[in-house]
Length: 301
Figure 1 (cartoon, rainbow, N blue to C red):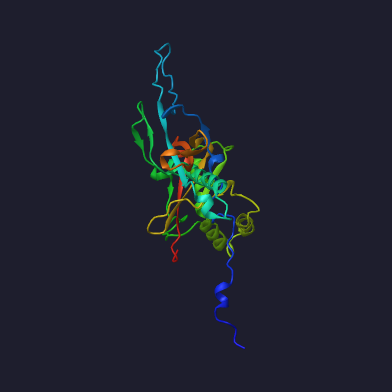
Figure 2: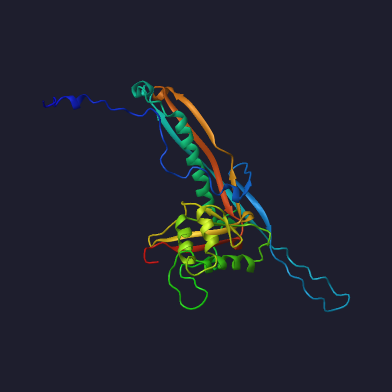
């Protein structure tokens, strides 16, 4: 006997009552790696003293040779950020058994805030820093602190991903710049750079075991640097990814903290507003305390 064709029309469909977060960066990766400062107001300056040199005394009872003290200022500017969502007065009723995602929205705002902190730090490392008496003198990233995509120890190079020689070049830059040996160097990269290291060391290098442990997450240090994976790093139209290294005192960062507001808005028919705010700012304190590493992510690299 043929079953009635109308029966499938009555098969029930069940809907989930909870909410799940899509894949995204949730915690801040870089906040703990920089120097946190307080800024009361819009801007704050930091006084700096440059390098001086002694001169030889060539005469007895001569006049003291007085040198000018080389000073400068770096300026940090903070700016407000926000993210907000509205829920209509009747959303809870119309959702039926599905819960209104208020707590999940607050969590999602926290994730957005954490990513905003990291993005501000990245912009502070790679962007223009301002100095001078009034904070209007621009300081671009020093090209001598950039390890190019085609870097090799000797000979003509071609664009490549992350390699051991590029990492050694970072260490060399910081050593040449007289960065204190006790200062921790942070290297910020994406997953692709870990893949590059694994592939380039697998058959050719005694560092393979250490790189394997780094990729597996068993360790986070390699060649004396602390590795930090952050997928927010910029990549240009030629698939060139800008990774970077820095020491903690090289970047100052200000953050008054995340504030969450939940308000009922009479002018919006008593909609519920969930709004999260923050005030963030950052500055690169000295060009020689940071280094860029350009890594090719194109399929041919």
